[in-house]
Length: 104
Image 1 (cartoon, rainbow, N blue to C red):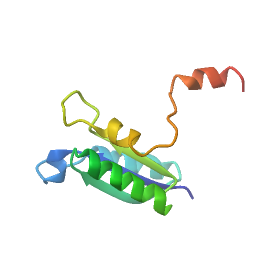
Image 2: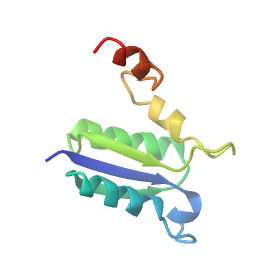
Image 3: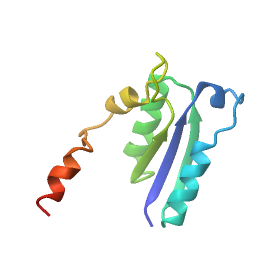
């Protein structure tokens, strides 16, 4: 069974001021599709904390897949994509999928 980690980026969720609904929704979807959720975190919109947690999960082999939610808006604190870029080795552009589909 493939292992999944879910990270929600939300200042208000982290402080307990708002219930995280996206993390549990993702959990439900992945579990219905045969994945095991091994980690679920709600972290503040803090680039260093997010990237360090993602790196910890990846480097320890805790999960084969890390799914993130939140932190993708247009406010200065929405930095999930940037935190992800800090730790990845390769970035896959979804538009490349169209290119690959033409050859397979």
